[in-house]
Image (cartoon, rainbow, N blue to C red; front, side, top):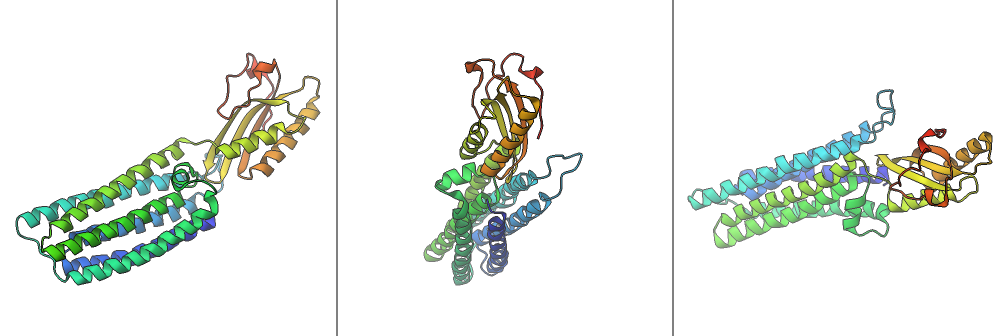
Length: 332
């Protein structure tokens, strides 16, 4: 993912949500529509979430230290996970409670919408602003998603920012239409229960989005391998020259969205000298970095081919041949 593209999408969403949150809250104070209160809290949560994503991106750029030798790239995943928690608690649970409370008030005859036209105007304007934010997120995502479907992009992206913004913007658009439907039906029928139902619908929507985000970012926090296409490029880079006979096993791990660790045990010919092995390892590392520029940390260990069946080219890694751990380890 282009970091600049993700930052542009986040800033566009944050500015839109900040303005929308203020407008919605003012409209709630005028009209008393619970769906507007839920939507204002939703927009406030989204604004805070985008600020968290920007903070995570900034902190992830810190230089590696002795305590954290692989750097701080995963901080972007941590802040994306916090976003899902904020969206679930501050957005979803609050909206569910507010919707239930609104329905209770209606059933007791205590709730009535005032100046619903104000609510409708604010919601229509908010839909326009959210559409601009969503359009920006889609445009930036299209630069990096390639031939993937939108579901595949959200599920398999190693950079959390654009999928998070996309899901939040989609949720915001759907939530606004729910709020508009609730206010509209309540105005037409004179029954405020529709406003409460719409508010609960917004809450349920936010809970679902928060759970999806939590599942995806949890996987990133645990550590995900390189994408299938990157693994194929790395394998090709390793085996495309005579200095390496094959891959015994290989592991890849994202240290951050744009930083990949590659560790592989490679088979070399028995008759080559130590100097030839070192030169071959250096050349292989160069090919890997040319094929996959984000492969910044590479560890290659040379070993001898025991038999034709002992060399397995596998991204996930095959069992090591007997005695393999006694071989010389060369780190790049």
